[in-house]
Image (tube, rainbow over all chains, first blue to last red; front, side, top):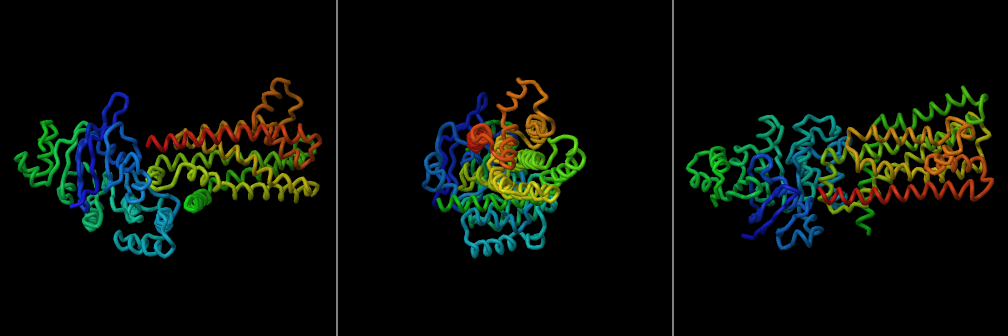
Length: 245
Length: 250
């Protein structure tokens, strides 16, 4: 199967801290890969480097065959990202937000209309389409923020803690939406919710202090730790600190 | 190039909507200066020439532009705080496209300001109408670039909470150092030189002189214009460099 993302010794260092330390990872096309880790593990920095927002200190990554260091403009054309914080134009309506992103990604008027219909269908946003984004509930704002990352029809989608701050019902609803995206695009998801990674992922990666300690499907995670839940296995690996894969 | 222009248009459209849908921006950039223009004229114009409409209206036009620094800055700072800009950085838009779009989104409001304040000024005192006013309106677009550039710079440097306080320095600077509210002749020579070296006084003089006639082309037009343009270029260059650096360090 084609590798959508190939990461080779990717490192990001700040003054006194190495946020990501010689990361090596391959994510297959169409796969949903979850990165787990406690705060400061390097998950968000990894996503920021892969989405061209942060320049790596050393190492390289390839998005399909394009190099992160040399082909950033081309890479930007096939990926999108939903950051931890809600990122929407607050005084625009839901419909205007979708139109804005569609047009910015170079879509024609006809393509923009098609995108709107698709997004409404996937996220159920048509019921609030004329509402100003700032006046939506937190759950709807989050949904819109994630929906906007899909407007450009990316081949690769980065979801940085997509369900952070959502109540349990909204989170489950968003899971269904993410589940429906599986196979249509390659998704790299970071989360603090272990059950989220367990429910959604094809494979899981566990990071600690910038280093990748484990990669594999959840069954392999259970086998290698002798635990029966992702949460227990995660604690075992992170507190043990050993390299499991 | 065509893609860049299209993206600037799309970004500008969004910025215009954001600004126009904020009632505070309309109150501060249109309502408040207009009220001040009428009130100060009615109360003071017979006491001192400072408040005759031929001086007051141009002063109000430039004073109102100083509020735009606040609103451009606030829009950028809010976009940065909400991760909105971070998301846009992943798009293929470039830093200069963002800067242009923020600047362009303000220009229609500036045109409305100038026309409105001169028109109302002319209705109150019909002697204001004339060729000078026709020259002052496009010149006010030039002076506005300094305030737009300052807004871009402050929005890139400050966060959502600090931008209000920092922008108020610019508004106060325009209010006090432009000499529009008091006769400059009464203050010390050193202070007068200091005021002339800053863009606030020059911007006001430029528009006032456009309305009342350029007696000396160099002293009344060229010198204040060059001072304003100098500061404008400086703040724009700084804003673009800082914006690019912030964009990259994201």
